[in-house]
Image 1 (spheres, rainbow, N blue to C red):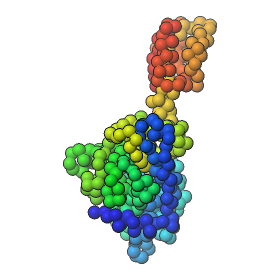
Image 2: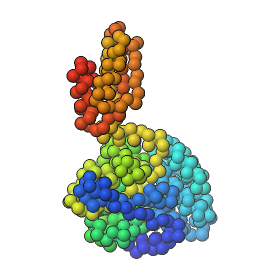
Image 3: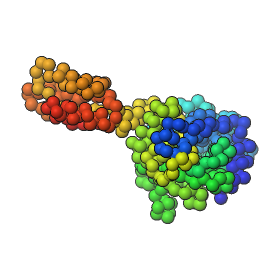
Image 4: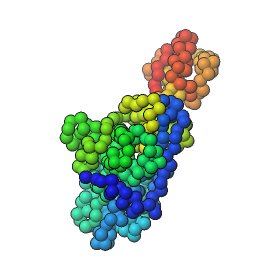
Length: 402
C-alpha cells in the first residue's frame, strides 16, 4: 500500500520542476454554498494539470537500463503531457498512445513536450491495450496513468500542499477517474489531518462508484462524458483498495452540472478548467454530498487543458442550464409586420436576440404561415418563464428547443 513517506520522498524528488500551486479562498462560492470554500488551482501546474507530479516521480525512479529503453504510456491527454515533459526533462525517449478522438489541443501539446504520439483506439482503455503491445514489442517501461504506487505518490504531493497551507481543512473534494490522484491525496489526508475525502466521478464514467457499491472491481462497457480526463472504464487494481481504506465517499455529477460549474468558475473566479477539473466544484455546488455551514472545504481543480471546441459547447450548455440562453420556436402568420410584432414582445420582456431563422417553406406548417426559430439571451430561469408567459399571452404557441 502507499505510505505517507512515499509521498514525502516524491516531493523532494520532483520539487525542482513541479510548482506548488495556489490554494485560493473563493468568496463567491463560499457565499453561494455556505461553506468556507478554497480552490486548489492545479490548472496552474506545469502542463496545465497535476499529472506531471506522478509522471516525473516515476521517470526519476527508473533504472539506467529502463531509461535507455525508453517509456511508453496511454492517456486521454493530461498524463500524456506529464510523461512527455518528464521524459524530456530526464533525456528519456517517450512514446504516448492517445485515443483517436483525443482533443487536438492535447495531442499538439504532447508532441510539443517532446513525445512521439500514436493515435489508437476509441477511448483510454483501448489506447492502453495498444500501448502495452508497444511495451512488449519494444521493451519500453510502461508508465500507468494511475495504477502505479510511484505515480500515486507524486500525485499525493498535492495533499501535502493542502495540509500545510490549510491545517483547518475539514473536507477535500477530488476528481476521480482511475483513482491515482485521490489515492495519493487521501493517503496524506488520513495521515496528516482529520479531514474527510470525497471523490467525484462523472455520471457517465462512474467505475469507482459502481465498484464500491457492488463490492468488486467493475468495468463499464463504455464511458460517455465531457470530462475526458476522467473517462476510464475501470478503476485501478491498486487504487481501489486505497480508496476503500482512505476515501469517505464517492459521488457522481452529470455533464450538465459539470458544465454549470465550469461556467461558474469562468464567470466568478476568472478561472478556466477542463471538465475533469470542474467535477469537484460541481459536486459542492449541487450538494452531491453533505456538509455543514462554514465547513472548510477544498475543491481540487485538477486541470485546465480544455479543447476550444469543447469549451464552446460546454459554455453553451452551462448557459442553458442556468437559464441564460434559450432557443425557441413559434409559428407566425405570413404577413407583413408579423415578425416585427414578435420581436417587439421579446424586446418588451427585456430578452436579447442572438439569431433568428425565418422559414416560409417548411412542410411542417400551413401555406400561409412562417416557421421562426430564435436564439435568445436571458437572465435566468425566472426570466425565461416571464418571457414564455408574455409570448403565450400574445397568442404565440411556443416550443422550447434548448
